Length: 334
Ligand code: NDP
Image 1 (cartoon, helix red, strand yellow):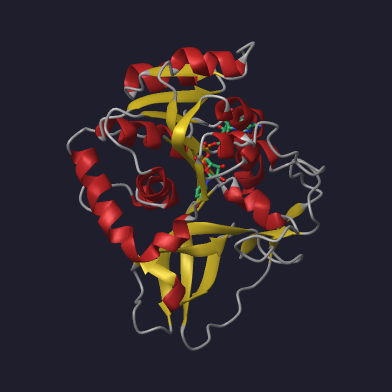
Image 2: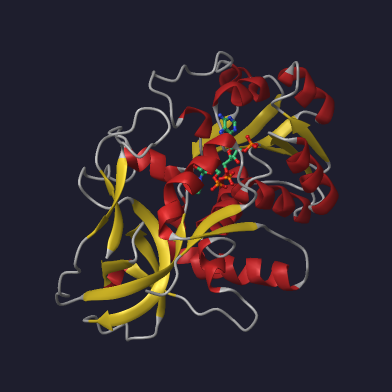
């Protein structure tokens, strides 16, 4: 079994000095365990957090162990009553050919005709569910409100803007390239887009794109973009703190927003969000997203890269903004 092993805590971008692809024999299954042959591995920004030693919502990946990631695969062998060979399952496993997981920690999945398996790592996986629950539960959008989304050309952000439009809101996206800005406006129906990399004065650019102020800010990036947004919030605005990718590779303590006082001045609600808190309600969200897809009301992009050996270079695309859609690594049958 080939696995990417965490060898040392990365400093900055992850390199081959930090993780190594190793091959080792599989151990036998114990009672309650399931052997999965991974078909698809999820490449997520959060993995960078799990590699660090900072306290977080999951324990750090121990040194010498496989790089943790969600995967989708086929059950090869099972010593758990809920799974049999041939079933498909999603779980928090790792960047590896085969994973051994406790049956109760796996979610069985069944694609409908016409649906690709890997949808359960993208539109029906953490990405779609984060957009759905994060925006609706924490953003509490009302028709007519203005919703601003960062990393809007990315996997989660592109869906948030579309759901905002479906809920009768005005959707404005921040993205790091002209191509992404065009895509979210022309293809996804965002009302406006701002290229935060080329904008000379971001605070001003947000004011122009959101003349009535921002009611919901769905934040995926933190940092300077958050700071500029704070000056454009309406009274009683909601900030959904979904991610802060601008600081994930930072070696220095990340400074808090200079404009943090605006949270008080504008009586803003800032709430952290974790998709795993909504596990019990995943079926409800998948059903709704499935319906929107079938009705042509939302669309999404995946970027599927072949080969376990490409996990690292694929992962680093996230931090360059070079990914076009949800990043997934596909494994060939072994
Ligand atoms: P994306 O597809 O959005 O890819 C990441 C994007 O972030 C890049 O394409 C890039 O877009 C942008 N980015 C990278 N570096 C920076 C930077 N320094 N400053 C500003 N933007 C940057 O990834 P996901 O959709 O998978 O994840 C988006 C966010 O959601 C992440 O923060 C992630 O951690 C979070 N998340 C949180 C969950 C939760 O439960 N809380 C669950 C799932 C995801 P650009 O070209 O625009 O710069």
